[in-house]
Length: 436
Image (cartoon, rainbow, N blue to C red; front, side, top):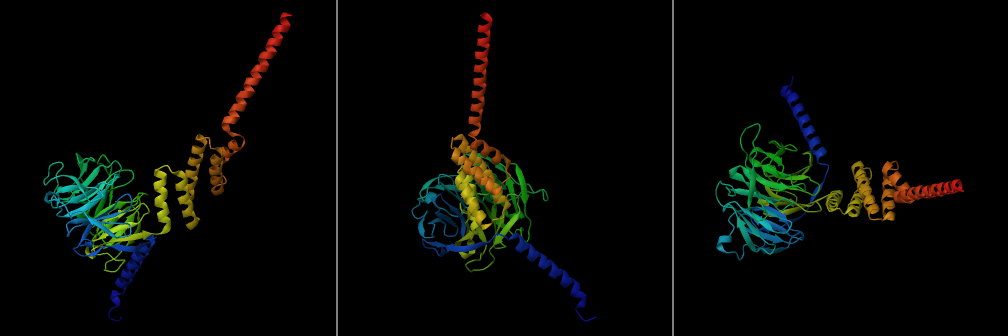
């Protein structure tokens, strides 16, 4: 036997394992993202960034970045052009010392967590200081090394109170409401929260960097599920930092030591991963904050590359995000249009077909309530194009073609009334005949 042959089985096993890992990576990464642009460059002047930590978007798409080492918040427009810094004219008591997380509510109020002064600062979109809440300590409403921040659909504020092992909830006015903690079932130890986000259903997602997990909580502070483990394989984490949600309910997590972003579905299945270590356009070096716009574009604070990078998804993902937003706002025609655009890209997608049918049936019913018979017919016809055997559409369009249920009921009522009149006349004639 030649030297080295005893190691052949080990080499084969390693090769097979590597091939399986590669297959898994390429299987789960079905969705594709490309880096469209980077925003900001290294520097200490107005437009410069020096370890960007958090990133958020306002209602018109302006980009706000917490610049941790420059101790400021920078604002850029949609194209990435610098607009202003928040701290250029701030008074001493408003000065930021360690801005970390950032979140923007539905009224475009901007909340910035400062980990060193243990406060949450509130600004408007002009960078003007409005107020603050919190202080150093462990009592309710106080912080020890706070990091992430998020706003829910009711504009309540959630702060990841890192060294107090808790997430605290505040009202839109900054009044303390409550808190919740994560107890690891395997370790029986409390974990430190770093990133926090809210989805469209006001579920709260919390990243625990020290145990490489993401946990999901209800508004009542009940943990629904947790997931994640340490490692470099797909779905695993090495010091995850921040988290964001899109319109559809997908979850995005930055992984500090794996230099990547991972995207998960609502049921915690890995959808894709993008980014790798390096200084190039499409690389990350220790990504921190993250946010997602209404189209599904992902903005990442690329901390050690001193920039924010914008990642653009495939076209159908943009349509999915807009469809979800329109559906939430009850703009059914717009949502159907977005789903139809997806069907052009993916004509065999059964889920999209089912979504169009469901929304078209809802839209048809709404038309019927609004007495828009032609509109209702149009939507039912669209349903039958996609599923010629749909019983609801077949029944409803038949009724509409025959004049609608109301007309049929009216005809029935008229027939019954006519019959009663005839009977009354006959009875009257019979009674008259008898009297004669």
